[in-house]
Length: 116
Image 1 (cartoon, one colour):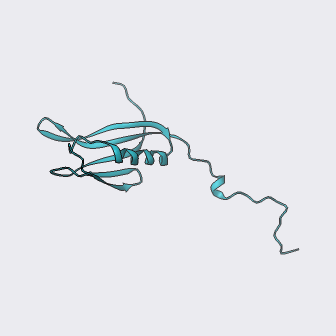
Image 2 (tube, one colour; image 1 turned 60 degrees about the vertical axis):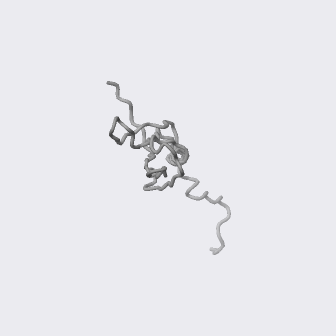
Image 3 (cartoon, one colour; image 1 turned 60 degrees about the horizontal axis):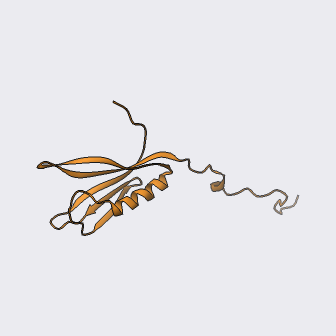
């Protein structure tokens, strides 16, 4: 037997090429922020976007939204700093004229709308 490699069989592609590509999921991008309710402020959540895609596409969309979303507070946005606290959660601090505010952008898997 020869120690030379067997060249009669084609080589297999790398394992990464054999794996199934990520399947699209029903995803949503949620925004959590403080909103004014009369004299009080309360923490709320709203859906900014719903789509079929991969988690990576969801994270890209969340970053775009974190950069451009106009929260209720502050009225004058003087800049923002974006942090990733987990793969699917962005924390955004918005600099205002008097104080800073924050909001969160989350990538979540949509499950269902339940009618009343």
